[in-house]
Image (cartoon, rainbow, N blue to C red):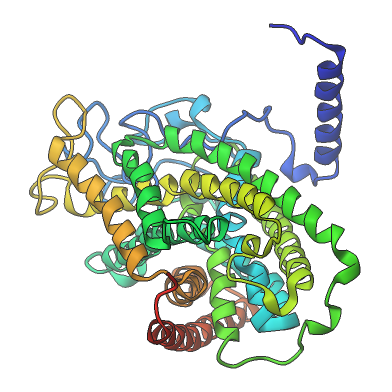
Length: 511
């Protein structure tokens, strides 16, 4: 139906002018692709498509049955995928169906990375500044640089140089790289365990966040935090029926819309209170017990390495991956440091774990928190789906590959007992959220454990092993430096987060 008023036409034309201007400011290496689609990356719609765990189902067969292998990892020859200057196509990939319609542009990939590293958990960044001061702001920028670097070298480990001097993709996932370095027997198991822990803990954090936000909106109501978590958990139960990432991609789009609304609302409120900002309250010293928790929160907020091999795999032009990753992390670093700083200046020492709970007007706070709850509920399916994919690929591909039968029936539908297992995973995250309802401490613990392993230590270690003899001494020194930082942040962060969690339980549950 045509626009009923010239006003809407002007708005549309104005938006297009702004969008064109934004694109014009970007480097040419990020431009030149086809027009962007109004959704997020489509990782696959059919049974033969590549899933987040990078396990290809056999073409024309039932998922999880028939012995489908990942090209280049299970004895099959790798497809001739040249990274530099190549324009990918699903039709050039062994065992994968589709066409250019299934591929994504660098802009869509950037949206996905942005949604991963600039998502729900920025609401705790002012709390990180509370305990880290200016050092926390420095860490937000420094960790962004390190995570961007490790993301690029992780993807670089997917490629080897062939006899003709061309970069050829010979590995297809984080798991494939780990198998090359740690061995076929243990490599996949180690990475799958770390990924599964991080994904499930992310799901748990979403449920905890929903409870914190709802009790912050209705502190005097008859429903306590645990009950709010259970109510939100009931809403999440249909996630057990997700069959592919197409539905998750659609939900991710609405996540970004909610995210933009929240950013505008909180920034507008903070700027409106600029005359009362507490400039003198931002400290230069480091609280040795609290700052490691803040570091864990910051590291966790930049974790996206699990998804990077799949995103790069689905890019139409893989030569633009580096540019996409650079700009997404630059934008994230600028926004996070500004958000954390401005949020803390507004509430100073009264800053809470979830910044929106500091809003003074109950109606306004309830409105903002409700948007955040909706965003948390819409963000839950992505890590949940990735977690159940890992479980299914690891344990439920059918004998003799795994100890359990396949979750897929002959008609391509999930079996009833498989649906029950998926629902139980949702229930498990709800029960864990009720048991550990300390949002910031839990996030710091996860970031210090799996975050440092997946984003700091392993990418650099893989890079040193796979590219041995090909690296400059400066690259080698920097890789070891990042590994050292990863162990330092991890050990101190795990110790202090665990201590803070014990202290929190001694004080009592926040109900």
